[in-house]
Length: 365
Ligand code: B12
Ligand code: SF4
Ligand code: SF4
Image (tube, rainbow, N blue to C red; front, top):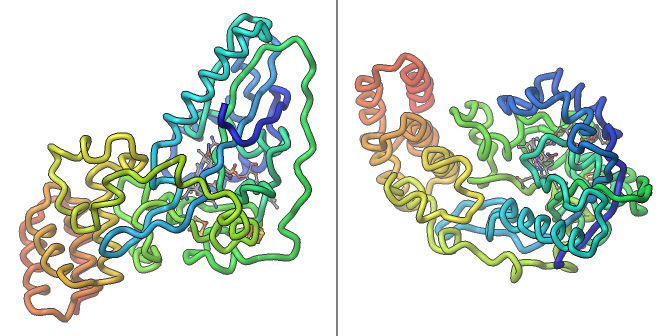
């Protein structure tokens, strides 16, 4: 059905449940409250089926070359084309229907199809289903696809006992390339990522301002981050061996729009512009924030004007504040910047945003 990897495991508590709970207890989930809310379900997913069932875990490759935006800045490779939640989700539903048609399911139809935003610990179940092995970067690595594959699951009532499978041969060995390369030191211990420090969290999931100390470290990533995958020897090998750019395509907005466009996108057209793309997730103001921060660290021809325009007239305080930081950090000595910042501070009545603007203003001094 076009899937690259598949394996069964029992519908049972994931092997890494304890590690997940420790991760939550240390606050490493940042503001992703849904993980805490679903703690019990994640730690024991047996409630996902009424009767005895197995979990079919599948993998879909997405390796491709790095994705630069026109005019500068980058996005995570997985996000360049079609949204995997839709594509993989549909594949799983089709697969479930087909298994049912062939009379293979005890209950007559497949149970829940899941990918990503589901209350289960996907990487742990996937390693038990034999799809890959856990790594120091926390990514699940597969010898053929490296870290470049998505995971999805289907709950199936089947009349046989499909137990866990051993993971494929491979390991990190003595390598520490991802830990050494992570610009924000987000890999706080082998296999443990603190989302609060991770560029991927900050540029995709965080709905508020990115902490000041992380802003200069985004390393050109305006959405997601691939650094720990790109430096991984398993990732480097897979990039060439299993390129999937043709299958996933490139969204027209990724192909044609640059960071200036992200800052200028009107609210009325945002949905149409980004329809079908994973870049919709941080919403219009999140993308504008990210664009401003990247331009602040890497000023280019014309960024001064676009950032001034954002600071004075964007309707989102999140975007305006990011533009203020970008102007102070990247253009602080340019004519008119300090005045523009003073003006923005005077106009801002909300104490939360005003305090951040004052902090930005100090950078320009
Ligand atoms: C929340 C989340 C995030 C958060 C937190 C990530 C994290 N590492 O915890 C943020 C937003 C930062 C994030 C980023 C990314 N994510 Co994400 N994310 C999730 C999500 C929804 C839950 C993850 C979770 O529960 N984390 C808690 C930790 C404890 O569990 P874990 O991440 O699975 O990590 C395992 C290891 O840490 C291991 N472990 C713990 N301690 C130790 C110690 C040692 C020594 C070892 C070896 C292992 C180990 O146990 C865990 C379970 O097996 C899953 C989907 C899902 N429902 O599971 C996708 C998922 C993990 N993400 C995915 C992807 C693609 C990414 C990014 C690559 C996206 C990008 N390019 O920007 C980055 C990679 C960052 C990284 N190095 O992990 C894929 C991973 C595919 C793969 N082959 O690994 C998933 C499975 C989504 C999917 N359906 O494909 N993500
Ligand atoms: S995704 Fe980027 S910021 Fe997050 S752990 Fe990997 S290298 Fe670090
Ligand atoms: S870069 Fe090295 S240590 Fe990190 S995940 Fe890849 S093999 Fe493991």
